[in-house]
Length: 385
Ligand code: NAD
Ligand code: MG
Image (cartoon, rainbow, N blue to C red; front, side, top):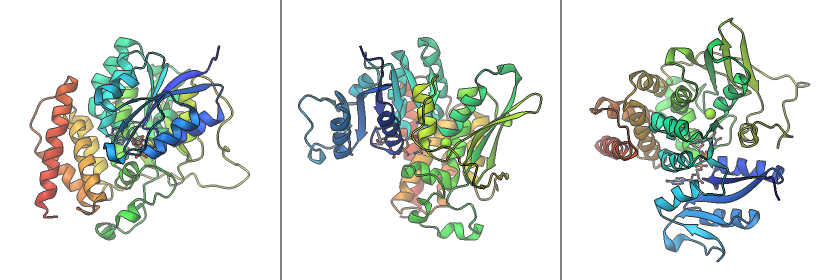
């Protein structure tokens, strides 16, 4: 009998999906892919199914945009069927590599069914952190962080006493416009925003890196994963993206995790946890000199980071609202409907209009998500584009 860990990969056709497949190619004896999902990219999903002989799949796609799938593939298309795939009886592990709040439902479905979740989709914790962590606690399923900073913290905390932890430090590259004169930010193009200095990632997270909304989302993600308040979580600019995060203990000592800026390191660590095996890519080469500098982020350059921190401190519906408005604003920027600096304006306006209590169940979370999206869309429409 095969001892490979059976797993489902949601969002298989994206950047995290591809890095996960690289880990699978490297360790076919350790991992077996039994389910995959995608949104629209039917050809890419088809080729993944063929390469790894995946029996179960889910695709959100218009019928006429879909390539024909092998007859033996068990293919779902409805929202319920995505939840069913996330809770597949044979799966031990579910990788959630979907982008945006669309990852929330399947993450909950997997955790509810007791599946360990390798979580790349930070938005699900931002939108439904309490519900997600409560669901995991109730079923006994683990959330294994795959976001590189959170995976780094997870590694640094292994074998340590929780009560001896003082604070955590998330590093950030500073994104595409780290060194651009501030007054030029208003003129940057989508093409420039999509050129990340170190990482190769999907478009949304690349733009989120340029605004540092990404680090804001990661602070909220870290709050739910590690339980630290905002004032115990620092953000530092680290241009080379080699140190992914650090933890500081009460005696003042800090531990860091270092690896080259590629997601295969964090993903392999999470997928094979608690085992370590040969990596997909080469480790750091200390025979070459490289830069490990750190500096505090400039608040004027990254208003999204300030807004996210405020939302984390306010709690209640604010983190969800931050995420929903950001998703809408980033989409609008990608469609050339707003400029780069308007992303944070749209988020701020949407937050100022927020007037509701904390949603608790999934239906209420999804309803509020819809309300904020329409508020943000109205603000964009009023800009006259
Ligand atoms: P991506 O855009 O490259 O891929 C997204 C995947 O989700 C694709 O497979 C797509 O088909 C699917 N998808 C998109 N919309 C969907 C929907 N509405 N319903 C179901 N599936 C949908 O994104 P990515 O860069 O791989 O990022 C995925 C997640 O991982 C994000 O939450 C991101 O913040 C996080 N993350 C990414 C990186 C990275 O290096 N790319 C690093 C850390 C964390
Ligand atoms: Mg990250």
